[in-house]
Length: 214
Ligand code: AP5
Ligand code: MG
Ligand code: ZN
Image (cartoon, rainbow, N blue to C red; front, side, top):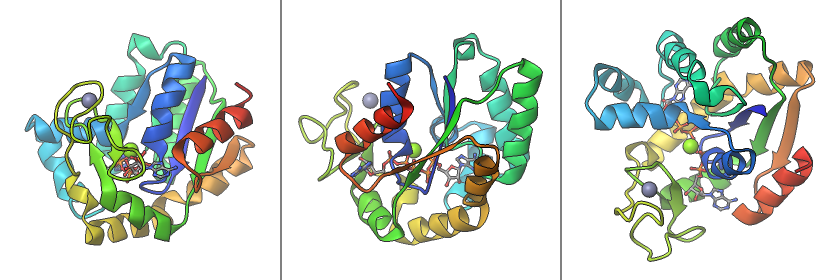
């Protein structure tokens, strides 16, 4: 299975991608997670990316494309992958088309999770993430089992720096202007599958599995 997860910031791409990755036994590739781990480790890439991420802007295409290019070459992508948060611009999508063609593979589906902006703001303010593995939690909708630590890593979950309300608003603007056009791009290729993401996490997972026929 080779798939893309599309959706506004906070639509639940990461939450659902983890479940899909488990189901299909393929890697979840989140460009956001890759940037955050570089920021945490203080790499050059991390420093550069942080300038954009903190403003709610997209990291420039040439940087982002280079990362995905390297990642797709790794052997664990042989049987498929879930791209979570990439592509986010038309040039990124065009690059991906070329890359997959030269790898001799095709995309199976582009899963679009639809959620209203008002719901997004609610979700982001309660989001907590594991600084180690990147799993997303929510103080009300999906708390860690002990309310404090990641269920898997047992380290304390934290708030993402770009989840402050003013940054969320600018991320939403960026989404509408630069990423939303991909819905038509992939719709035109007959690859788009839209699932309503307003329901509870488990209900949304069920709807996604049903739509994918698994
Ligand atoms: P990234 O990390 O990808 O952020 P994003 O797209 O803004 O998406 P999020 O991770 O915030 O949301 P999500 O859809 O994964 O939702 P989640 O499952 O966590 O990117 C960060 C930044 O990096 C970007 O702003 C950009 O600067 C840069 N970047 C990344 N990729 C790039 C690219 N390709 N090009 C250029 N720049 C790039 O869920 C959100 C919350 O809601 C959680 O708390 C969760 O528990 C909760 N929740 C989820 N589903 C539900 C539900 N059904 N009901 C109730 N709560 C729910
Ligand atoms: Mg995410
Ligand atoms: Zn963890």
